[in-house]
Image 1 (tube, one colour):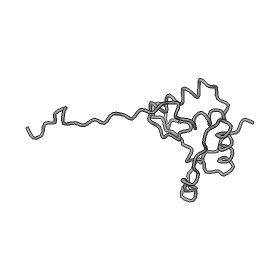
Image 2 (cartoon, rainbow, N blue to C red):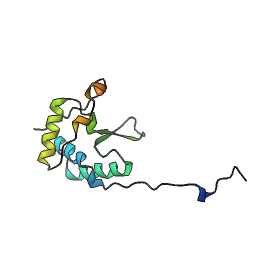
Image 3 (cartoon, helix red, strand yellow):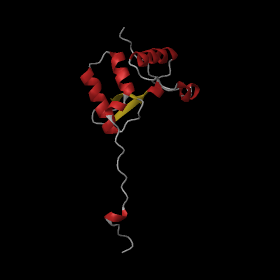
Image 4 (cartoon, rainbow, N blue to C red):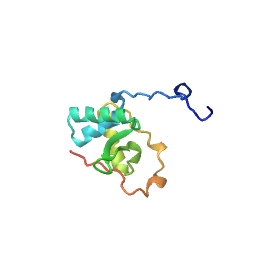
Length: 120
């Protein structure tokens, strides 16, 4: 019949798996926040499971049973926070984000720009 769909006609693309260790900015952010290594590793594993953007920093939930929402390095708008994050990246031996790819004017109206609470 014309309306029937066979399983062989459905093309399922496999999920592109990302190695949790590729989430380097989660590691940097975690060190910036004073997190333990096991917690950072757990965050990286969750990012890979969620297929979060590669520049993910941390997640939050909109509700108790809601999905994880990943905040990214692109959302760091404060210039002093960016400089601090760059320093943390260098301290970890990781390349800092390409801030030129972020449109500060467009993003400046965001309600919650990311500003890390530095544990110095």
